[in-house]
Length: 313
Image (cartoon, rainbow, N blue to C red; front, side):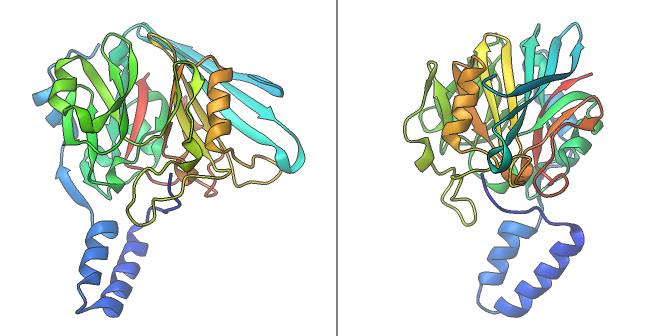
């Protein structure tokens, strides 16, 4: 999780100008602009790319719990609930999507502006609407880094293992795996449909993973700390084709303070998850359902992200 804030076009221009004036001639300006501001589109039409390359056919604890809504189709069902625990300054509010898939490939991924590359962002709700989603959450913000294994909708986009990833298979199983010990092609050959590259793993074999409070997603600038009480997004596995997605709001005293990674893992086990994995959080944490953003993003509104997981309506 990072505290970075995706930039508007105007903000990018202002920052780009400031960096150029301040760092010109040092080499630092070019690096900073290239790394954090300038969009790098690697694939300009993701929908066409997937059509050409796909090899797979797409077919709580104490507190108040309120069922918000549900949706059922031939491919999947989803029920959205709101959970409020604690009181006063210790209040935590989170949102749970209990998802059962009749077809594992019904859980799909989509990219901001239908493009793949670095620093390309769009609101979760906008990406969801562009893809006819009835349900969506923010993904792993792959566009903030250039490492990891990224397989989306049965197509390879990136193959540079760096951390523990999460793999969704076409048979409905979901596994945490070490990216550095395999390849994207090997995963695809084994039936992987989607991968996520963020972490850390929160729960394995039904137990909270030791040492998650000391985990770092990356060691690049601005992406070290994912500790403390924060807004969070996570996905958990209850059984084959039975998933639970959680978005915890935070940084809003009296409404929701956020949770630590250990507390997030506890939420996931309380929901019955035997495996759970942390996704990008902070201002990115967003849950979308039936045309609306369900939660209250911590930035006072949605922050742009590079990708989502979704179910089509």
